[in-house]
Image: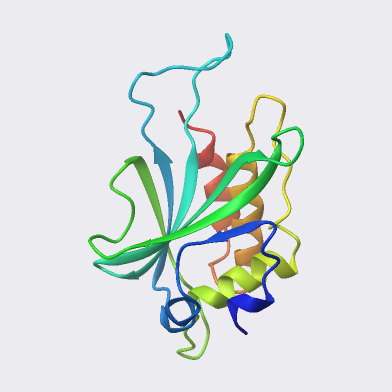
Length: 167
């Protein structure tokens, strides 16, 4: 299945269809991005923005970043899909939680298949809170889908929920 089948209203693809098709995912990293100034916005406490990095080799990844700012009210999320060929996950990471894939019978999975799973479950459509928060919840739901789909092992979603609650 190609990226042409993705609902492009909710995806911002900066990775070619060919790369998404060929990129075999080996591990999944949940990454809390640095909040260098330890700041919140509008008198709200500080939080971390979280992203998912699909490790495709020890030196490359494809990042899925659900970002707010779209739609009339700015609360509609869009998944920014980028790639890096220097490391296994983003270097903007304060904390990284790694999950090994648990595929059966030596099966592999391409990054494109994970994007299509996200869309098939309707996870590409997301509305953030008025404070533009919600990336942690979105990731927890996606990890649950990956566990239910047999891509991540039993207990991954429970563990992810605990990790995502950290600041």
